[in-house]
Image (cartoon, rainbow over all chains, first blue to last red; front, side, top):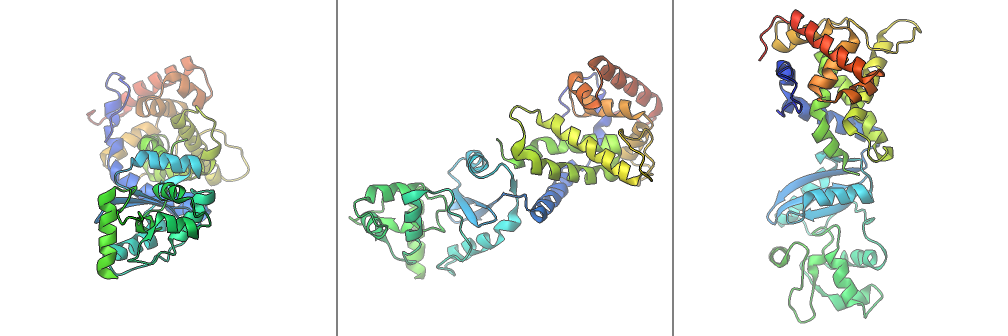
Length: 209
Length: 158
């Protein structure tokens, strides 16, 4: 376990046996804290990381729904800090609230699910970007749409570029399928998780359509 | 403001050690749980720059007093931790138990001073703030506590 931080002439070490089972105790106490915070309604943001074929995904949910999916390539600490700043600092690693989302994402990667049923919380996107995200949900599994056509669908036909930035800043990728938006010339275009990840997702959907 | 998860990871172990030393291993986990639940609730309103560990230890002390008060019969106000906490600890003969038996024989001020300074690693100025006395008094309480502890505790010091 961690060391005592002050040098106090060896007196600290005599309390070493008060530290027994600390890791196990911390796990037990953490689970208890999550349970009582949930019961009291003061767990504002729950998060949990899952393993997927495209690497680790960090999932975060409010009581409204899934609010953030972060790729393994994103710095976890800054993602959690952003959630603390923008939503609430009452953030805990609490897998329970993410159970349904984790299961649906697993099924998606196994090719057994082509749309998500978990509630979504769009509070991290505003204005036009938020409107774009809701339209992305209308692009069917296995299909793609161009940036221009999503712009048209979102009521601003000339805003293909803004659609690009809405996709790039999509707080809930994979579940909100910004990977289905490609360039008009047929090339894939950019992706928050990297171009290979976009290709993997589109391949997966093409093979299970 | 940092995510509360980070507060639990950074300070949870130290606060648990302090709870074990101040109120004993049996009730330590209950007090820890009440402390962190209460801290989570108040966390968004915490003033920037607050010393988080001292804040948590102060909440833990209040929770321990609350439990003691709830146990005490009648409306007698209890403002301090008991000098001789009554519950007999389980796991007789265990090392942790022997240590706790030695710690519980200290007067509460001394036991707290020892826990806050030697176990949580707090400077005496901070210990004094939690104890509500002067830095010199906190230093003296810790020194007296350690001296008395060494005289009582027969086990080996690792």
